[in-house]
Each structure stands twice: as structure tokens, then as C-alpha cells.
Length: 453
Ligand code: NAD
Image (cartoon, rainbow, N blue to C red; front, side):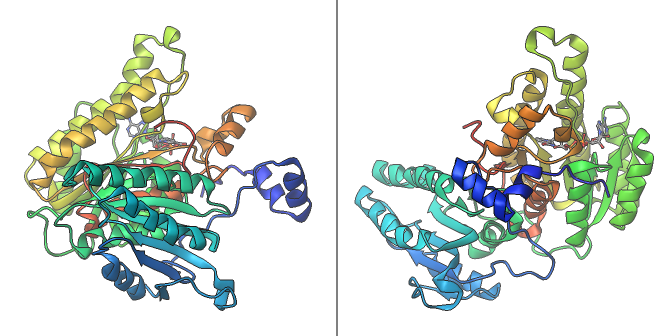
């Protein structure tokens, strides 16, 4: 397996002299994040589940966490209790809040509990959809919760995160369960300060999960793509690992490791869309998950960006993806009912980045495509979502100049870079058949980067 670049600073501040020095100088102290491991529970300590206002989802949230093996509390434990009264999670049902004065209930519930949040703990606020609010005040209150959560995420310590899940009217517990589980678990280690909306599953979604789903991952030979292939295979999928012929050996190794198949395909070639659609139809009887991960950078300042640099990046990162989607959706038998599209965007596509006008354009384009596809796909029981990574420890970021790399690593609430598996776990959650109510969303995996909206 390719080794990941090492964050030597984070290692140093984890030692006794490093802890002392960093606290004396007021330097960042990145915590080791709790990450999911096979067999590990969703949460490794008790969860406080509280409701504010009507709180119609509180009981279902508590049941879901109990079923996942969590000790659920409805009030703050004594400090002398197990784990020193520490909480692995605080889950707040705020879906019933309508009046500004009611926001005080959120403050009152969270303030005493927030101090007790364990390292890598979770604050998860469950809210209603703002565009479904019946009054201006209710819309203001529900939107206000975003400010609350994003600021709490910036104040959370020791690897703890805060996120917000909006539940649309008509969505059942089965529709939001995989999302709440994801945000509580170590799988969302590097997802912080995010807002995701879950709706009711489309009527056309298949009722049954397939025993061994087929997933396609482009650019699977290395980096994030290889990690995605591994995460999907761990979840039980047969993974078709796609990459260019020049990556032959590396691709074969990944495909072997995950018990999948290797497919050499330059996604930009004119024949690629039809070839992929035919491969999926004839060899696998259709695919369940398509992950558009292949991507390239050809960085230059705008004034030095020539037509070649422009075209190559737009082709690989956006145009090829759109052509493949068209072919898969038009070829009978290339996709199974309820298929999931997950597309890799980037923080650069949200915030822009110096020297990356071509790349940022392509990655913003990915977001536009996903948002436009989502309602069309819903009619076929399918979904499309985008994942926007921030600074991820890969060969690409290891090549950055030291100062730029250090900036990228520290300029986020978790004060460290993410790992390819953090992106992969996010993709796996969106690809999960249970996530059928998550559609048209853009999820940043960036440790709440200081860049972007
Ligand atoms: P990487 O360069 O390590 O891997 C990309 C893979 O795509 C390679 O194996 C490459 O051979 C393959 N590829 C390139 N052109 C192809 C083509 N025409 N046909 C088929 N395969 C092709 O990149 P990575 O860092 O693992 O990034 C993966 C994705 O995540 C990319 O879309 C990237 O833009 C995005 N992303 C990465 C980061 C990061 O910090 N690494 C941040 C934001 C977004």
C-alpha cells in the first residue's frame, strides 16, 4: 500500500515535551481523531439525546442509537458517573423549534453538556428544512441553527465535531438513520461544521438491498480512489476499479486487494462511455454505485493558463464525467434501479484557489451537475451527491512546498489534514442503499476549513 505523508508536527505535539511546548507558545495541538474500525461501535461512550420544542424525532433518535449499542441518556450524568460523566455525543432534536425565544432551549441544553464532550465527541443537531418553514420566524430560527452549529464546531476541542442534519417533511427514521449514524461515528472523523439535508426516499427506490452490489470507482489505482475502492469492498461491494493503462500494475494491486476487477480505461477517450456501459451491462448485469473520482490538476495562474492546460483539466474532471453519466443512464441494463452517483468535487470548487482557475472551474461544475441531476434521478429512484475534500494527506499534497502544506494542514478546526479513508467513508455513506433520502447534497470533508462559505 502507498504510504501516507507523515504529519511530523502532530506527532511531536502528541509527546510530553511537545504538549508542554505547544501550550507555552499557544501553538495548534491537533488531536488524534477517533476513526471507524471494523467491529467498533458507532459511539464509544454514552450519548445525551435531548429534544427542544415539540421534538418529534427525539424518541426515534434515541432508539437508533440504542440499537447501535449506545447508552442513551436523557439528562446530563453526574460527574462521578462512568467515564467521568463524559459524553461521546450530544444529539439535539430541534426540528420543532418555531420561535426565536425557543432557541434558548438549545443553548440551555447544550451549554452544560458541551463541556463534558469527550475527545472526538459529536454534537449533532437535527433540524427542519428551512424552505419548508410555515412562517418567517420559523425559517429564521431553523436557519439560525446553522450559525449555532458552525460556531460550536469552531469551539469544539480535542477532535470533537459539530454538524447539522436537516430532515424534510415526510422523511422517515429509515431515511435518515444512515446519516445520523455516519455523523455520530468515527467514519465522519474529518467532516466538521457541515449541513446535510435528508428527504423522503424517492417512491421509485427499490425496496430491497442487493446482496453484492457492483460499484465503479474511476481513478482507483492510488490515493483517494484506492481508499474508496477499499471502503466500498469492506461494505460488501464488488468494485470495478477503473484507471488509465499506464497505472496497470498499481490498479491490478488495488483490484486484487479488494477482490474486485481492474478495467483500463481513459475516461476522456471517445469510446469510454459506451465501453463502460457495455462492460457493466454484459459483465455485471448493471452497476449500483458510480464514483467519479479520477481527477487531475494542471496549476498555473490565470494569466498563464493556456488552452491545453484548460482543456485537459475540464475534460478529465468534468466533461468525461458528464458523457459517462449520459451513456450509463441511456443504456438499458447499465445501471440497477436505485443507483447512486457520487462525484468528487473539491474545496477549490467552492472557495476558489490561487493558481487553480481551471481546476476550480471543473470542480464547481461537478457541483452544478450533481444539483441538476438530483431531481431527474429521483424520478428513477437514484441519487447524485458531491463530496468536496479539503486538505487530504496524499502524494499530491506531499509534493506541496512546506509552508503551503503546513498552512493547508492547520487552517481548519481540527488543525490537521484528513486521510484518504475519511473521504472514502463519506463516499461509502452516500453510496449506502439506506442513504436513498440524501440527494443533491455537497458534503465537505475538510475538518471545517477556514476557506470557503
Ligand atoms: P491522484 O492523482 O492521487 O489520483 C487520481 C487518479 O485518477 C490517478 O490514479 C490517475 O491515474 C487517475 N486518472 C487521471 N486521469 C484519468 C483518466 N483520464 N482516466 C482514468 N483515470 C484517470 O488524486 P487524489 O489526490 O487521490 O484525488 C482523487 C480525487 O479527489 C480527484 O478528483 C481530486 O481532484 C479530488 N480531490 C483531492 C484532494 C486532495 O487533497 N488530495 C482535495 C480535493 C479534491
